[in-house]
Image (cartoon, rainbow, N blue to C red; front, side, top):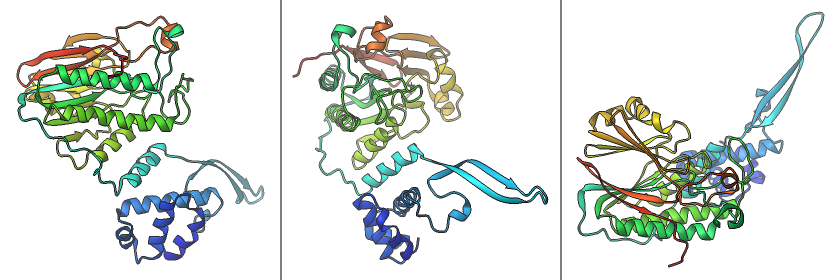
Length: 393
């Protein structure tokens, strides 16, 4: 982008950061120099500039691109061609355009931009425990938490809102940590559907079914980050290393992306925390001779999960090294365990109350979450089951 192009885009900047990026480009010799002045990466500078170009195009300003039939941020939906009936040559053509929004790219770009200069100085430093058992790993599983859901006890059997959810989750994490052994490694296994909905509208992402929502999405985002940070902080008090798994769910397909990316940036400077940034919606970890697999359960059924982990090229080598495999899923909100093909597959219950859909459909399950401790050679060694506690401590 030239200096003149950057200056021409100034009126279309929607945020101060976008304006500052354009100013750096206008005052620099090239994009590398602009990135140094702004204190960010060239990739981030280019993304911001591209975003402003799309904004300008939506408002009718796109010099040098209209001859390509479609401006940035738009896609051709329909083309109508008029031919000369005598010569059979093209005389005129009309294009019908639609806005084209890549939501995943927008989310990732926004996170990258917001966190490009982020340094987690405000995070409290937690001293590692002096004694831990290196043979042990504890898997803390939370699934289908549906933060943001609203349930009325008169209709659903139990009340549920964001205030109740915060209390229940913190109490559950505290109880699981207190009851688990001091294993060297812990995995925060967030199995998906942590958030009840996935955008500004409280609807399911795929079917667009209207959901009972308790709060605004912006508040939901903030609470999700705070609660994940709380869980990791509590685990760091007892375990030397914590690995975070943020599984994709069917209620929070896009939110699982930004939550995972946010955690990656948030704990980037902490060598005791690892965030699994796998885009594939199946996740795995090898602990000694034990393989642990995780999937929400919305793509592959519980009785077929062992085949995926055994055959997929990404995990085939890990499967071969393991003496036994334990796979964990959620999605259906109740408990179920299967053993087949050298694998124990377990479906986990939810801590959350039933919503009106589940209540009216007659679905019932015992609400809980589990912390399971594995020995690197012998498999499962112990587990603690925690049920919802609504009392503030």
